Image 1: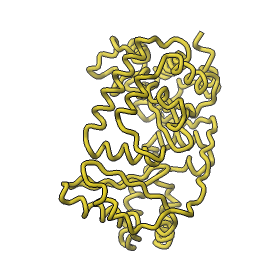
Image 2 (image 1 turned 120 degrees about the vertical axis):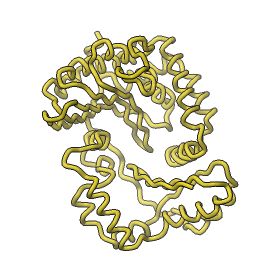
Image 3 (image 1 turned 90 degrees about the horizontal axis):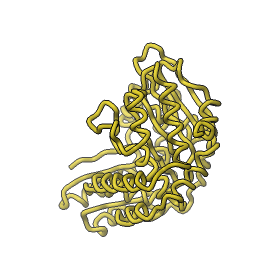
Image 4 (image 1 turned 90 degrees about the vertical axis):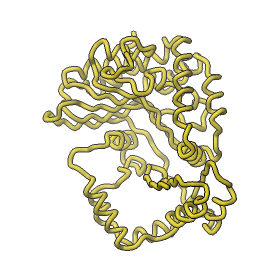
Length: 350
């Protein structure tokens, strides 16, 4: 079998993919992972590996973006911590964290639920969870100029509605309106003929090396935006065409674009959830964010029922004349300032 663990802003996820006859053993191992205090040697090894992975030049721009979007809040702190916080972590700190009340969501696919539930039955219910600090969005930017780098990387985003709101379907489909998954001017996706105007604009202008729209939902907030990689002398054009197409979501999206976005979303959903492990991950995320598992056919039905007016209204409410968060790294002499991007949220459409 295969086991993995990953840390996020709101949760730590443990995953096991095993044969059916090994489900009980795997479930017991996962239950132990969320309840047992690791040894001093394990804590020391984890600290050393985390510190070794930290570099002077930020490698995870999305982590930096959250730091700008949720300035001076716990939600904006680096997922892996800072060098000082990791170095100062003790075995007692880890033991206290493991002993604290916690919510455990369990999702399993391709096995008997009773077999998995039995392994987690011994965990005490989380009846005294502390209230989470709200994620307060703040418009800000952070620019890290490194002229020695070959390419500039830019991420910027707006605060968007969560999956628990009526805007969820529109928010999920907007990245597919802007560009199909994997769209890159240097790839074989033929961006010059793409149905997505943003992809065509950036390809025709040779404005970026790669780009990716994204929607990142959390329990009480979400981010929607675009991540781009561009040459230093193409940053201004990349910014203009990207902002223009974001604001265009409020006014000029056509029914044909929405229909093609729905097809792309349908294909991506089928591809992503084809594996039982991926489906279990999706169900676990649903439990954490919505309190229930959302079947794939329900996700698809919501997307297919979305009409053009709802998409435009959602874009207008959360993009038009709204603050944004931006982080950039690399040779940035052509990158416009914060006020330019702020004005671009409404003015450059005309």
